[in-house]
Image (cartoon, rainbow, N blue to C red):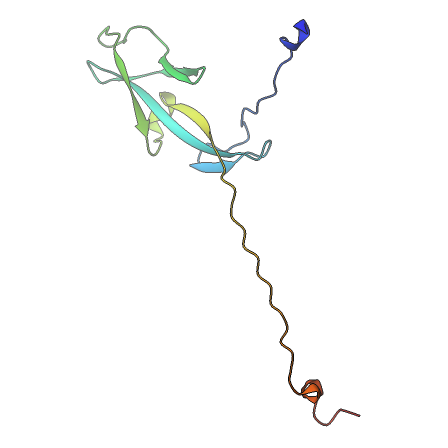
Length: 126
């Protein structure tokens, strides 16, 4: 009972999902993953700050801005990542819940022919 607390849940980290695509399927768990890039900028001087993701919360690496000394910042979501922003950007991989796809099935019944000899080939019937 007390050892149940120490059992670790295996949660997939989606390490095999490529970072250069917007959405991809994870090869380890099969989930659909969306890559989102974020930048942290200083609120007063608008300079890019280095950051990290801790428990799904994006935080700056340093408490104070290295340019102006301010503590306020804002998070900017990027549509596309540039090579210059790669050092400052933070990648969050989010799982997109898959909805069950509706399947449709049809069947075709064979029509009965009114003339029983119509199925025979002409000239080859005995």
